[in-house]
Amino acid sequence: MPSVNLQTAWDAVLKHDRQFDGAFVYAVSSTKIYCRPSCPSRRPARHRVTFFPAAREAEAAGFRACLRCQPHLSNGSQMEQMVEQARRYLDDRADEPVTLKELAARVGLSPFHVQRAFTRMVGLSPKMYHTARRMERFTASLRRGETVTNATYDAGFGSSSRLYARVSRDLGMTPSAFRSGGTGVTLRYATVSIPIGRLLIAVTDRGVASVSLGDHEALLVASLKREYPNAILRRDPQGLKHHVRMLLASLSG
Image 1 (cartoon, helix red, strand yellow):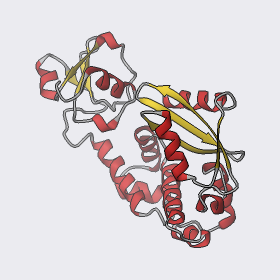
Image 2: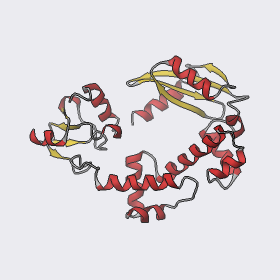
Image 3: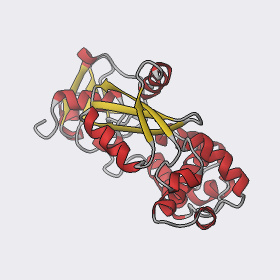
Image 4: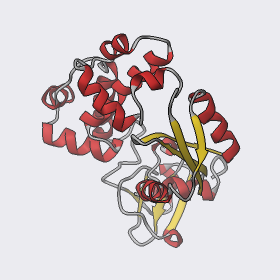
């Protein structure tokens, strides 16, 4: 498997990383089944895993395709294709309300099944994903210099009071503070090593303001300064121990 080294491949399996689907498959000796890296099945023991560059090599070695992730299909399983269709539908309507019933009808699934499959494969429920895309649209508008009111309606938020409550939780500051680059805001931050590099988390007295990944702490801090040039930055690893612990637990599944 020349294009992906073994440690990278194993890390992708541990994280169910969809970016590596198509780059390789992994086979488990105890079950004689091979899977995609993103397969949601239980993680196998490392000593039972063999990597192959493609499905045909795994099958030639005596392994059979997983019925759950269907690694022998080049475009993904039928359910994966339906979830991807649902995700694109939500992306195209980031500024519009979309009900679960409407989404389910669009992809040909029941509301129950689209909710369960989407949450399992994407990591967020359809509603949470749609709201996250709205927030991305909202913050992008603020960065372009739009007023808070214009950004609110551009993102499809109908109630400014509801938006302010959400921003306090999701951005860790008011929209006006975010728009001004963190004026009047103190960001406490900490970094920690993870298998793929370094992770930074920054918080305010309102909540988590930033989570980012990179190779070195200095680069992460520099990026945080660029994002919030007018904020006060304070390194606080002791004060953020709980935040770091919870974030690492979330990343480990």
